[in-house]
Length: 448
Ligand SMILES: Cc1cc2nc3c(=O)[nH]c(=O)nc-3n(C[C@H](O)[C@H](O)[C@H](O)COP(=O)(O)OP(=O)(O)OC[C@H]3O[C@@H](n4cnc5c(N)ncnc54)[C@H](O)[C@@H]3O)c2cc1C
Image (tube, rainbow, N blue to C red; front, top):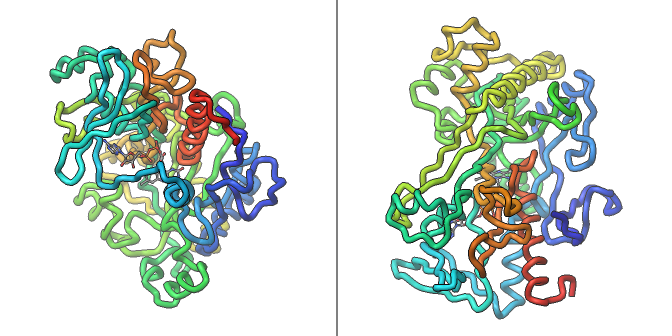
């Protein structure tokens, strides 16, 4: 899909940069603040023979600082970029918060005519004179379709839901970028991130007055690296290695164990010796996983969460990619720029659950990878866009739901394959493209 309108605007690069748009609503900025050890990470890349790259340009192999969806040092979400400005200028836009859609309403001709939703404890209905656009995300959209009678007929019948259309692909083909979050290095004091930094009044003032300093930075990921692939096209990296300026133990266990869903005993035993110490993590993730998961109904109660089976690493190739990612991380972590200049020391305590394997052998790392595997929060693929000949196709090339009329799905669920990079920009582009498709289909000039 390609939209000709500039969507992403990067402030730091020249607007003439071939790979960057300008003038679009969604801005992207370079980081305004970084830890000293981020410089060590980039220097480590150079020492290993890599270039420092712009990750959005043609060349993907190399090391980079991250870009941020921010404007003037402040998070620039799609609400800031699109909804708030439109709410000020368009009398026909009504935004209802705290509303939960429970069902799409179809008439007897299988045309979507509106939605039923819960709002402050009351069931309400919104009717559509033209069409319904569903953007509930790669978990929410298939869940809502299943609740509305669109999905595999046998599964709907299991839950006593009348079948509007039998679409076997709804909720299937779930993909993500599985990652391994546990690899940790400690560093010399002052090199990395310290949580007290955020509470320092000097930094708070710097942010409020100048939009500068640590509070302009998302806590955590500061850089990325992409090594060449040993399998297939070497220039199409199979791994993204995230550089995170903290370890799972940096915050003394206040927030991070919950974020990574570590078991309490694991956390306190495995990370005990580095609790509260400054450090960094290197987190490999798979760009193009082969395993596929699913989103299905737990119950026909619309307020019950769906069942999410990530099925991570079901395909052994995915585990092999992550083991290669761990080895690359170890190589980066022991580069002189990190070891000598920042005192980087790998937390090499053996994971008890994997200690039956020869320490740090491929078998040990595969066990480790399977133990720690975690979501990157990039779910995609559960309402697959595909030709009609594909039995798992859910939407067509104009994002129209198959088998019904008047309903489009517009979110990361339509990706047939998860993009081989972070998903946010791609999800926004799907929204941009869909806006053009809707206009075209209703005879409205696209660029008028
Ligand atoms: C913690 C986290 C960190 C992330 N970090 C990054 C990152 O650094 N870079 C990156 O590129 N991507 C990142 N992502 C991924 C990125 O946010 C998603 O890929 C993107 O938001 C997907 O867009 P979407 O429109 O498909 O779904 P969403 O953004 O999830 O939008 C779906 C919306 O539908 C609403 N909804 C669902 N069901 C219903 C219902 N029944 N009724 C009413 N509303 C409903 C949800 O509340 C949500 O607001 C991150 C995601 C998470 C969760």
